[in-house]
Every structure is written in C-alpha cells, then in structure tokens.
Image (tube, rainbow, N blue to C red; front, top):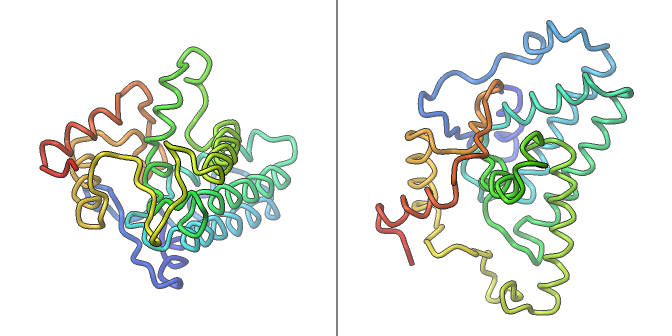
Length: 233
C-alpha cells in the first residue's frame, strides 16, 4: 500500500515486497475504502492505526526485509466492519499489535530478527494445523490469534528469564534463531523469495484478497527448500 510504504521510507527502510510479480502496490486509501461505507471517523482511525502498526513493526524489527501489509489491512477492515464499535475495535487491535511487537522484537529478550514468520503466516499455519477442527476459521490477523500470540510471548519471556534449555537467554547480542538453517539477510531473502515464487508462502500478505493456506505444511516445505539450497546448518 503506497501510503504505508511511505511510512517505512520515513524510517529509513526499503519497502520490499514478496510479490513474485512485483505488481504495483494496493490503491490509495480513498479508493480502497470507497465501497466500504465506513463513517469518516472510523476510516480515519483505521488509516492512522495502520500507519502506527507499520511504525511499531519497523521500530521493533529494524532488520526485517519484506514488508507486505495488504492482507493485514484488509483483515482489520473486515473486523472493523463487523464490530459493534469499530473505533474501539481498531484502537484495541493497534494496542494488541504493539504489545506483540514489543514482546518479540529484537530489543526484547525473545529477540527475533525478522517479522516474516508472523507476517506471512508460518507461525499461524502451524498453530492451526495443531488443532484444525477448532482453529481453521481463525485468520492469521484475527484478534483471537493475536491474543494467542501475545499469551505465548509471555510464556517465552518467563522461560527465557529462567534460562530454559530450549529458550535460553541470548548472549553476545545475537538474534534468536530456533531453526536449523541460516537466517542471515542473504539466506533469508533467498529462502523467502523462492517460497513466494513457488506459491508456498502460507499467507500471500501482499494480496488483500489472499486465501491463507493453513493446510499446507509450510514449516516442512521451508526446511526442504533450505536443504535444496544448501543452507542447512
């Protein structure tokens, strides 16, 4: 979305997309919201909250590479339209998202480098596949899933504080990498762009009308690609 790209540029970040077609970004806000019949105050709150969501993402994940917010924006719009008090929902969503960024970002003890696993649905698809009968209707940016992500984040913070064997405290200023493959910027870019080109990203976050694919074993497919590319550690 062009106006969200501008927010990234203001923070010195390149608004790169995983869209294999490199198609033009989503239309401007007025055109996007033209047929939604949102009240002016609700539309204004939606746009300002989306901008702050991008700001918080950039603040806590400054080394993230790909920034596609089209599907997230559309998801928040749908939730607002269905809400009894849309402004309250949007404001609450923004606060929840901000807390999640603070928990998982590079300056926290969790210390993840990239937003990709969240933004492109890898974590969400794994969560749904663990209990598809009750979770398959929950979208990757629905409040119900984000509430789970926040709760899980607090569990991780507790384990890390105890220097857990699986989730130890980070040392030497490193980012946390729980995977058995390299995630330096060059490797991460290659893996993510290849997955997108092959249609294997769980959430095509650059598409407002994407159909999230929870049923696809995204983690396994990524691991297989990593081996194919010679990036396993």
